[in-house]
Image 1 (spheres, one colour):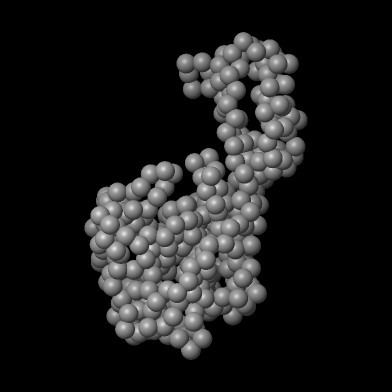
Image 2 (tube, rainbow, N blue to C red; image 1 turned 135 degrees about the vertical axis):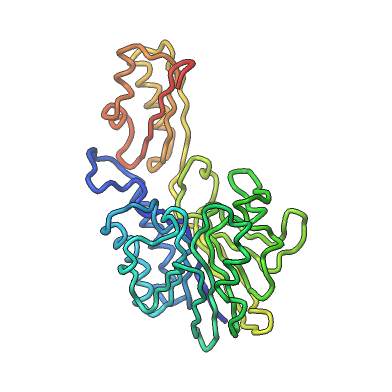
Length: 340
């Protein structure tokens, strides 16, 4: 039996300025904290293998120090003797910055189409994959898959690790149809126990295409470790632990999938029509709305309407920070009447 921990879309570095101009609670530490929580089972030796499905970082152009901090949790897992496979995602522009920082015999970065072959618990495991294809994956998927040679490797367990959208994935209440930037369900090949993917932030398992036909191998999305936008406010965030049995003829067999929730911060949108409100009334309205929310909430405060000069002072950053606890994160969006 092989126990594999799958996480993705950690987006480390998001809202984490190197030289913050204002002291306030930022989102950056939340992403690091949940990434470390997700990897704890590996540090404790409770899994045999870790796959990170991509978007380790929140963007490609980042300082070397951030790359070092982002890789640190994965290197701790590698130091504990647990192999780690990492897929560069679209936020890294398909390339891991400062790749020398990832130099470790137990950390494998799929920086080109390839297959990593491992012996885990006496089982021959083949993990094929390639960096995110940001445009036109439908037309090049078959070629990238062949280039990995994962289906040609003699192994007891074969897995494909990618950072792509597969037909039928559900995003923000929308089911993804087939398209140029989507892998068709029919393109998922036989001979794999599973496809492990990042890129879709909602945790889900795909086992059929849009026509209802069974996929040759199930596709697992663990989702992001934290909420990145209001569209995700109702989604659970976490990671997966997958258990596989060896089967050289079929490429292995998944016997159990468990989704583990992480403590994602609650998110809310608060809309206030400020037209004609005086400064005191607007201040009281904002404070009342914020006090009704959990103390650790992430809030998008939407103020609309033409503000009188005195009321405009109430939505300045310093004033707003005085209206909510320091444990809360508030992002102001102001829209004038009939404007933006």
